[in-house]
Image 1: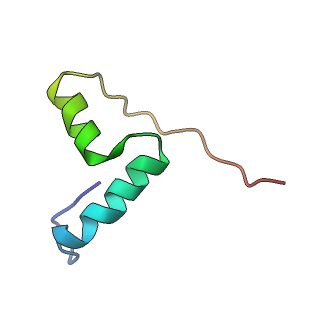
Image 2: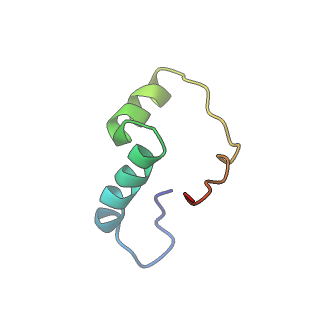
Length: 54
């Protein structure tokens, strides 16, 4: 999600990445880091597409 291969600095990527993780149900970057550190399995599957409310 965070990338150093384009022209947006890391400092400008952290808050949007954190917001995206929260929206997707992850309790922010700290929780993700903790989960990864403790060996929580990672899925590479894409989340199901969301549909617009009617």
